[in-house]
Length: 56
Image 1: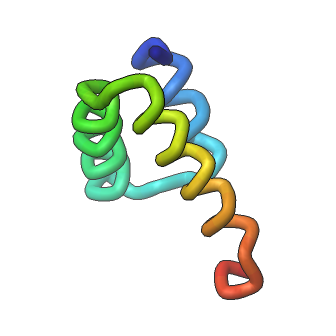
Image 2 (image 1 turned 90 degrees about the vertical axis):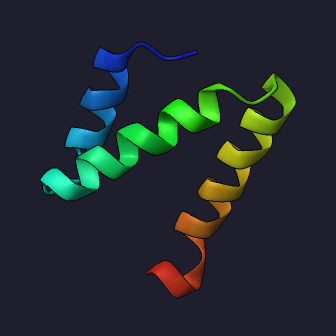
């Protein structure tokens, strides 16, 4: 599990506004409650989405 400070540092790369920072923090809290396998799968899915041609 990441520490809040490492998560915040990673989010800073995207320069999100306050609403997006809060939404991201809430999402992280929810994801952190899931089993390890589910967390890993979510991360893989998010990586695939962010690298897809639809996001570029």
